[in-house]
Image (cartoon, rainbow, N blue to C red; front, side, top):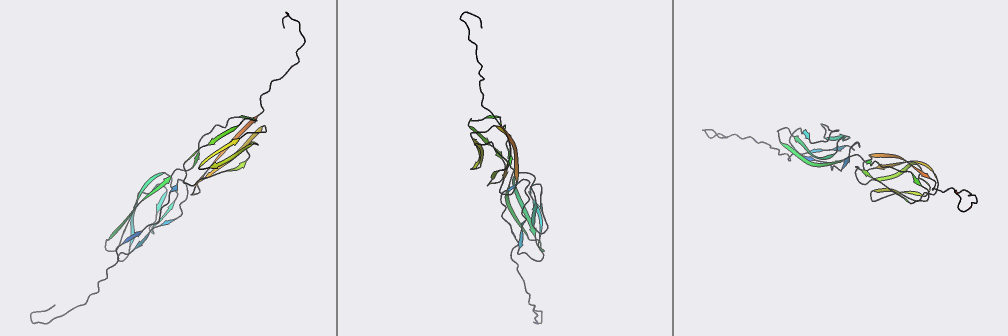
Length: 212
């Protein structure tokens, strides 16, 4: 600065320019209704002065977003969710992060009718299921199948097949578990009956032309 007489004065200033405010987001893997979420944490990078998250929208019911940027809880609805996280710094600069999160319905078995069966007859029963997040695991966890039948789970499809060799009633439980630990249990029973038989009787000798 210089006045009319030519006197001057100066002042040095230090201006600090911070990096732009940025939201560093976690990867949101497909999840399952009812499965507790491993905490997923958002971080803030850059900005001037104090920085904080200002809003979170589009989250599925059952999931909460904390002031510290942590997602937690267990989703109670399935669908595809467009999540928007916003943050701000001390001078009003903002940052936004948008992502898509898929929540699958909980695994469940289809309603099946396990009809009574006959010993010695081939048996083949598909066990249908819906929901869950791949990969799925399905296994026989309790009880036993009729002798001669086997449980098999390949390529996401479960079935019971074979030829029963012993008469009896057999109770069993099958459990399906998805990638996030959500599970469902099917309790069922198969009754194996004897083969039909024709009873024989001794017929008495008889004369022709007489009513029997």
